[in-house]
Length: 258
Image 1 (cartoon, rainbow, N blue to C red):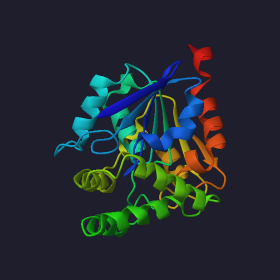
Image 2 (tube, rainbow, N blue to C red):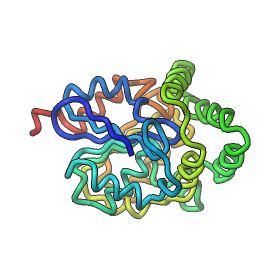
Image 3 (cartoon, rainbow, N blue to C red):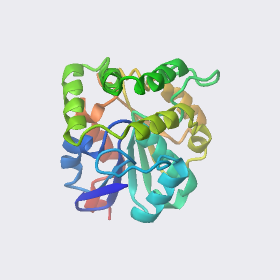
Image 4 (tube, rainbow, N blue to C red):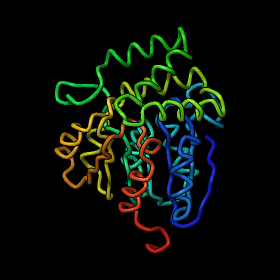
């Protein structure tokens, strides 16, 4: 897995979502790098990371993170990146100082006892379409991420530009990443999460509905929850300043906290 480093201050690891790469953080990263040393990770087969079959097995990803990332950084995970960050905090609880889950949920698929999530049929359809027409499937996913946002057109354009910068992810990596989204249920991990944690949601997110926050709080009452008005699934693009303000309040002011 590829990692780039920028900025100065306490270590902050950023992990992107499905089908994207670390370059998607650009605008937010430029601001945060004034206060933190950012470790921008490309998931297997995404961005500048190589791909080998099996690289998207959760254990392999977590072991790489444990071996290659700083000893006790802050974590910021968006969407799938939030799910992976949560899994890392479960397996290596002493390696996470603070955890921010951005437009992320411990369980992306609707269950009988987890109603505020996507239908399993949506993910199944995506997975089936991915092998038939990857470009059209990714375009559809871009639309889903921006849907509802007050800046939906700008968000779609920004995500599309970022995706094109280094090319689309490896097809097998996309398939395995989508399966991870479909099948990984980290609700127990969230319930036992002990480090300071923030759930930062978009008010109009259709992939991770803000109503999920009540269910998350029922699992872990220590969880801090903030909602960004007017934002969809990519608030760090559509509402970068609001996103930055919430994160700075949660993580602190960098060097001042050392």
